[in-house]
Each structure stands twice: as structure tokens, then as C-alpha cells.
Image (cartoon, rainbow, N blue to C red; front, side, top):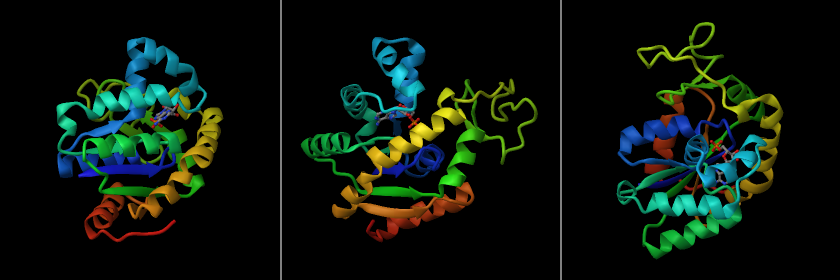
Length: 222
Ligand code: AMP
């Protein structure tokens, strides 16, 4: 199973990736996570990416493509993968297509996580992450206490907000999505790979829709 999850920030790509990992046993490859790791390690690449990420802008294509090439070459990606947050523009999509053609491993489907902008805003401003186990929560829908703590870690680690989930940065990220990433909807529809999924509702309901979309193979236009 080789999937791309396409959708605005906050549309639930990361959450649904976790369920897809359990169901299909393939790794999630999130360029956002890989870049955040590089930043936290203070690697030269992370330092280069840091300013763009803090401002909600896209990181340089060359950096992202380098990271993705390395990650796709790891043994666990041989049996398939879920791409989350990549590709994010036309240059990345073309480069991915060329890379996968080279290794004869084409994408099976591109799932578009369709969601209203107002819902997105609430999901992003309410998102909190456990710095230890990386589990993602939402203060509006999960019972987490005050201050919010992880319900997964035995130490009940204090949850944190991603710096780019602050209200002032969110607007920028949504603009970048509309300008750079949204054109990929048509790009993949033209290739017959696009599957529309209504991304509102419970995690389980959305997951059931994704499963129907990828196993039923119902193709959709833009
Ligand atoms: P995400 O966790 O997917 O929301 O990504 C967080 C941030 O990492 C984005 O706002 C970008 O600054 C950067 N980023 C993640 N994936 C990409 C990508 N494919 N291309 C460029 N920048 C990216």
C-alpha cells in the first residue's frame, strides 16, 4: 500500500496515518515530523529549515526532497508507506513521481482529506502534543485536565502546543496550502489517483471512509 494523504494543515492526516499504520503495517512518512526532528537535533539541515517552519512557510524543496529520498530508501518503506505532508507543491510531486517510477513503486491512491476552514482553525488552535510519546490531542474534544496532560504516558507528561499552531502562524499556513498544495488536487485527479474523503466527524468515522475510498477504488474528480 503506497498512499499519499493530501489535505490542509489540521485536516487529520497525522491522526489517520496512525490508524493506517495499524491497519496496513506500513510506516507513516511525515516530512513535518522529519523536519521537526532535524530542528530538535540542531542538525545543519534543521537549522536551515527552522525559520521557514516557524513562519508557516514551506521549507526549501531541495532540503525536503533530500530528506524524503533518504527516508524512502530505508528498508521499512519497501513494502509501502503513507506520505503525510508530502508532496506539498508541484515540484515535489513531479520529483516524487520520477523517484517512484525509477524504483517501479507507483502510488496506489491519493486521499484528499476534505474539511471546512472553520473546523480546521479549531483543530489547529486546540491541538496539543505530548513531547515524550508524540501523541496528538485536542483540548476542545479530549478530557485532558488543566493544564492539559498526556493520558498515554504513565508520567502524565505536560502537553505542549506546536509553535506553528499559534493563531498568527495558522493563517499563513492555510494561505500557503491554498496557493501551493491545492493545485495538486487537480494534478492527481488527472492521473486518476484522487479519492475524496469527508474529513469531518469522529476519527473512526473518517477512517472508515478512507478505507472505503482506498479499497472500493471509487475514483473522483476535483
Ligand atoms: P506539518 O507537520 O506537515 O504541518 O509541517 C510543518 C511545517 O514543516 C510546514 O509548515 C512546513 O514549514 C514544513 N514542511 C513539512 N512538510 C513540508 C514539505 N513537503 N515541503 C516544504 N515544507 C514542509
